[in-house]
Image (tube, rainbow, N blue to C red; front, side, top):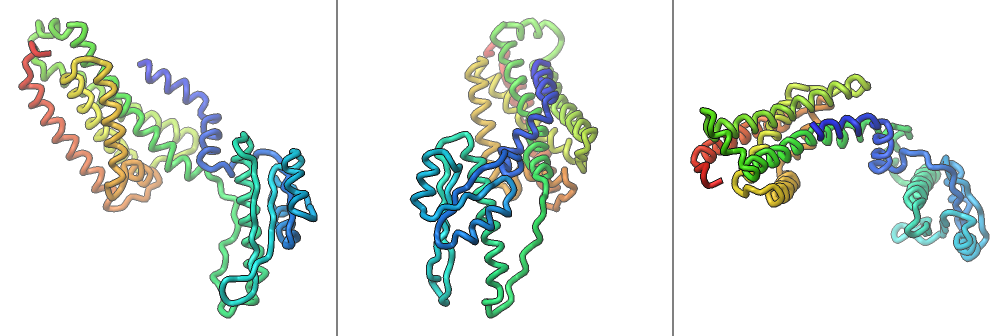
Length: 333
């Protein structure tokens, strides 16, 4: 319940989190104020025009690169771009070489780098347009510029998988605590007074944690839908969450029973979970990719195959775990 309350508290600041996390996912998506870029070199005019076309950047011209660097060190400009003409390696003609100088280790470094990158993209685009008449063959037309929002990609490739996989991992961690606490406090002996077996006790703890994960994921999906972010294939998505939850909860239960102490069991659970989830990159489709494809209603046969594969693995592991628990002597715990 404490974990649920913490997540609810975090969700209350979801708007601020989305803006902050999206800025990490795509720093160029966040307006960061005006910066001044010092421009110099024999190709200054082309670079000056590219900076002028970039919103959020103001060009400051200098006759010599040394003057631009002096202004940069004095803090008069945020970055320096020097454009020079050089002969092309093949076919004659010339190319423009641009050297960039940006702050090192500053909070504004990321913002400046993003702006400089956009300026260089603008310069490349305008040079392609101006020089297309010199080409012997007609080049592939450039795609039209579009101010697309990064929120779509961030939401479906980062945020939704995070919200879907967070509940299973929390359930597995709670399962470790629940089992080791019974063993450390000796309350498992009290449970033996009731006419139930150790398998029944483990079933109750494991199933409770397993069912909690898809229930919480369903609430996340509902909350996203209320906020205008639709998640397609909810049944397949919740099936995926249930299968992943079953695997990690089984892992937590087995480690709790085997180690019997909370601290080493939690540490080993965290390490093994990270290794397994990281090792999933070797699969044809990572679980996060599977969740994203289901959410945007773009699943492939491979996507459905992975979901069914996870379900099969979860069922087999649960059956093996019940056999393992049935062979444990309660006195050995």
